[in-house]
Image (cartoon, rainbow, N blue to C red; front, side):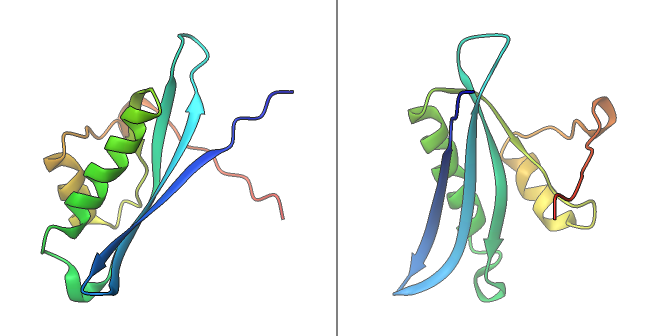
Length: 108
């Protein structure tokens, strides 16, 4: 069994206040040499929304993914999060939900 635990938490500080966070998880690719990164969480405090914090957090996560050798990046997001989807599209992400499925099983 091989383990590959790489997760990165990046916070956005505005005048000493936590304005938002992004969490990046990195996994190895199996078909090719390299890794892929998934943004598993992006949260911006309501006070700071619309000020570019989310965009900068995504850019910081992408920078970390590049440094870690990731060839692919993806984001998962609830269908209810229209504002977040607009942000991801502006950042160059494509909605691939029609081409794939997501299955979830609770372990506890």
